[in-house]
Length: 105
Image: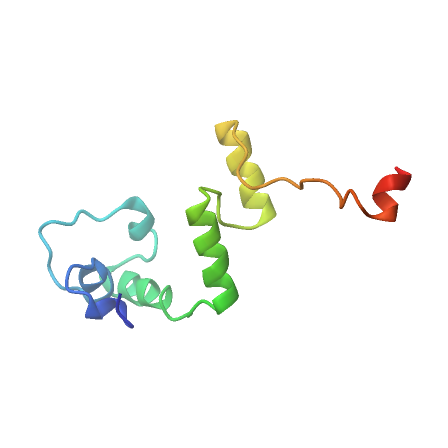
């Protein structure tokens, strides 16, 4: 899409990170807790975008998105499974049925 979030004209980044007025937006609670005032929230919101994901992270995000799995660490996936009662990530399909270890068990 774009290299920097502010390069996308329809992004809420302009309001949330740069303080540009956008009458279409209502600040979400998750945004409000980023800081005690506008400047602090802008600073913390911009910090969220400083990390550029690695190729491996991007691949993991794509795979989770394409397969409708939860993206996150084991603890987060377990929490989602408990909340929803649904499997949040693929389960092991078992061992290699041709391997010696599998045949022993």
